[in-house]
Length: 111
Length: 412
Image 1 (cartoon, chains in turn red, blue):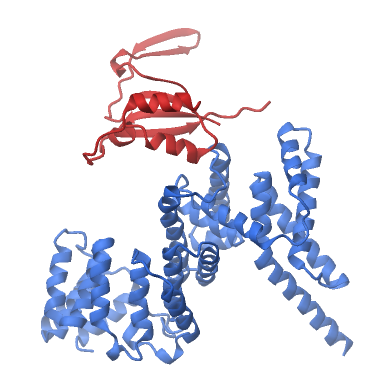
Image 2 (image 1 turned 90 degrees about the vertical axis):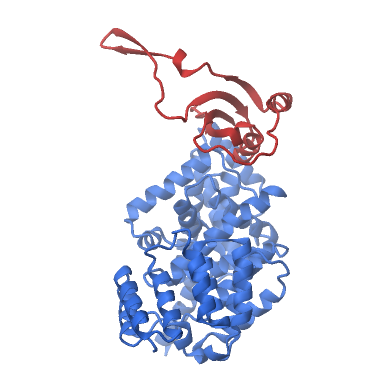
């Protein structure tokens, strides 16, 4: 089962001062286990562009810039047996403490 | 004469179906869900098996193993449905799993009970909204009709149906597993399961609740205790339920008003439930939050009269509870216990401390506690004023009645 894991900032990060898990270790371990298929940090929202087509006309605009402090900073595409495994993978990511992670399964489209 | 025999036979059959339904249905549903992953199919097939039993058993007699009979019928029915839908590849896989699941007759207790335990952890998964967890547990594990659940949650049946469907869809889409977690995960998840049971119990315990839910919560707690005998908080929760449940006949008067613990007729408490609670609690070694609450409940349940309650012991347990599970309400109860154990001044001191954070501001029970402690200190006028204030703050009509009576006569 594939899960998209959105890596997000959060207005209330962990106050625990214990050492954060090492992100490189997290990546290499999950890559090696075949649980992480892809992933990247995203450029800041100031680099984002919105594209729409309305009645045949192309509309391109700057943004969007999220008003809130809770933005998607990056993503990882996971391959896990079930939600519990995905939760275990997510909990050991440093951003689980500095921000938050959102797990969303990829829809399994019919044959 | 013949009529009488027929009637009693019919009654006996109906009884057998009802017993088999309560006992076997959740197991059948749990097993079919595990094997097919299809919640609706599992529930439908179990219902159809029961319907067939109602038709056949009066004519053919109740089979020797009613549960095994129902399981076989339900499983054959599931195979039928899946076979008909077997154009879809996925259904074929389910069918293969079902056929592989071995003979249906006389399901082995261990295996089937495990299915139910797995399902409890699925229904109580933290990735589901809390309300859905309680509703899904009632529907799937306890077999409570959706209409009854809807009534207890004060929503329409169609709203409850939608809520249940949404939860089942999420279980499938997000692939929430059917598994009893192990190791660290079990320690993390078990409190959530127990919290659902506790909610279920209080739902049955409240004035406007569904009394049968308390029985369901106790049944589930017994099941968990049997399956996880090493988990002390599970046993503690069962004991706590039994102590609280032992007072069910005396908690309300004829008008439906709450009767305070010290005014209840202790002869009418369920002494068998208390004895069982004590027996279960005797096996609990650790001091988790439910264990401490159960010990407090045991102190009340074993006191021959309100006057002989061991308040110093209760106060000590509240100190412990406040240390492991601090909350404003625990602090409030702690103030009450110390008030009885060590005098109203001690209680008022702790009450002041409990209120310091502001979390109890305007909470009618906190005002009532202050009023009671003030009365016991001998300050009639101030106590009366405080009881009036508490009466104004509460939204519960029976509670207001009781508080107004105390305002009239603070020393009652």
